[in-house]
Image (cartoon, rainbow over all chains, first blue to last red; front, top):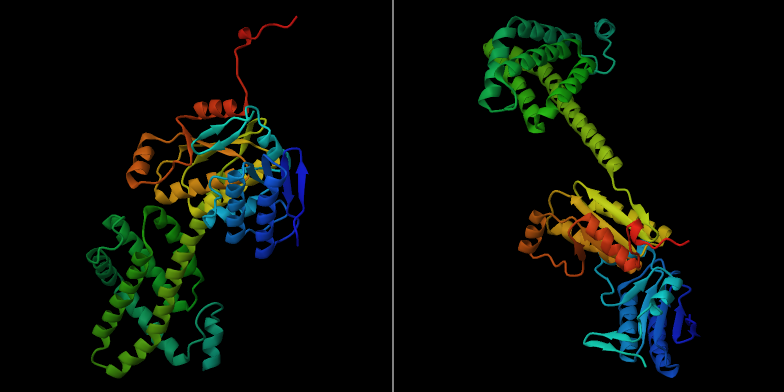
Length: 130
Length: 302
């Protein structure tokens, strides 16, 4: 099943509605990374509220999306991880290191629009937004 | 013959009704044990001391317990019922478990008694081998059953105590408290084991979602010791909270714990730590954009 990607201002929002196959996940990754450039997006939100299982491939894909989007100039937030999923993930050692997370869509948007957030954080410093 | 013996003994929870022959032998056996009570008891207590069992108890106590175990033992042999012995074993366990008596000791002393009595039977009947055999046939099943009863009673009592304590610990377990809008504190007291960590993490994650918390302060002032296991579990809790979008600040690491963690090389770089709970809450308020001012500093609006 294809995941709809919505554009909201400078952000892209991908809301996962049901369990995804590995192929769906790869497809989502490619679509997001492509559209970050196409829409000149500054933020990406992936909503996983509907997922009650997350395997290593899914976690790796989410991490890849975040890293690839950053290379393309957008910051990624994963929102809506369920408590049970979070617990299972850390037990498996899948901790999404270096990827921003937020409670839900609202928090994710607040995070992307947080005060003082003029640019994108990078390991070596900050690029100010004009 | 057999019917008469059944009526007399009516063993409700004991051995199957022994045949008249066995019953007679057991009677003879019991008479023998009664007769030599003092001597056998002393021999038994001596062997307990020599085997270094029940070291938590004084010699007088051992002798007193030995006496009552002996009497209950003989009674169980005589009546073929075990209720009295079961009750006594439970009662005994209740008294000696808090003093640190171990399962192997209890099993050990009962087996010693069995051996002491068997020896005395050998001594008494060694000239009549056939009779000795029949006596032992009557004695052994009953004696084994007794040993079993006492050991099972002891283990059950121990398990009961352990269950009780686990429940007590669970009840003491950890409250997640909201101190400000979107700020939770989680004071941990006592020992963190995998089961408790799981419960604690689940509780915290649920609370993060229901309270829409952004910052959590975990205070571990009350955690006495920490090893790499516990530290890793704590890291897991922190990571899981982060996945829900909450920042975790850990406070109250004692100097000893800090030293241990650094010495064993646990990587806590992912974890924000602040010295004490007050500092942790202040830091959390800063993250949330609160500022606490004394009243006189706030300009009156009139």
